[in-house]
Amino acid sequence: ASGYTDVDSLGSAQDAFVATWYDQAGSNDATQITGNDQPQIVSAGALVTENGKVALDFYTTTSILDLSAHANMFNNVGHAHIFNVSRFDTSSSTQTLFFAATGDNGAYKARAVISVLSDNTLLAGGRRLDADSFDSATSTGTVSDGEQYLQSSLISYASSDINQYINASLDGQNLSFQTDGNTSATDSLNSAGEEICIGKLSGTNPYDGVIQELIIYTTDKSALRTDIEDNINGRFSI
Image (cartoon, rainbow, N blue to C red; front, side, top):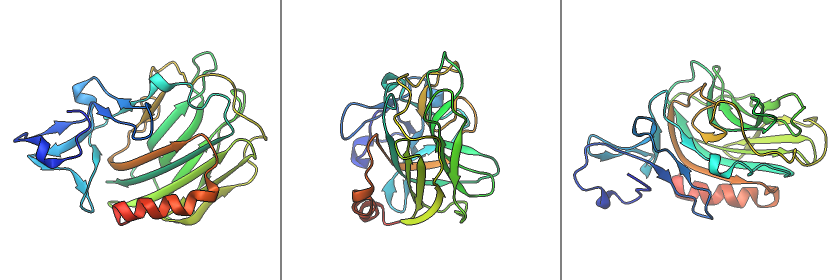
């Protein structure tokens, strides 16, 4: 199944899975051609929902959506501003919701990462230059297992800071992140073949839960952040 949003279109399917999560603003679709690795959208004939709205269930350790066709997304940019509406089932280990690696000779080097840690805190991080070390900001508060949440993460390479908001409140900040400037002019590639993806960190740290919304900007949307969050909340009633 690809891009289901209307329960009436599902017929009598007992289980249905997503091969393509369509980008509503452009052509950056996330795809998965391997059936066993597709997130689930219908279970036992019922649409997967969270708080009454459709959700994608990353229900196995191999569930992942691939964005490698858009590997230059974070190539020579000043910002990564990422919004997501999610709910993890359990946080017994680090789980990665979104991952993009740098293209430094195929090496494993994360440029932008959104994760939940084993202590139920949330993390946003990455690196600006291929040669830089990974750095991040982590929330001081926690999100409970099974709790729907809205995470807004501005990874600002241009001004060397990270500001993370959980349910519209600032919770996680790093004001000495890397050095000021744009990212390296290399595509998001790594040796694992999962260059930029939703639901894992280069084949590890699978996300165990549902994702309802993922919005990715490569510009600073701080001036519009509250409006974007209000719009998201109006849809998902977080």
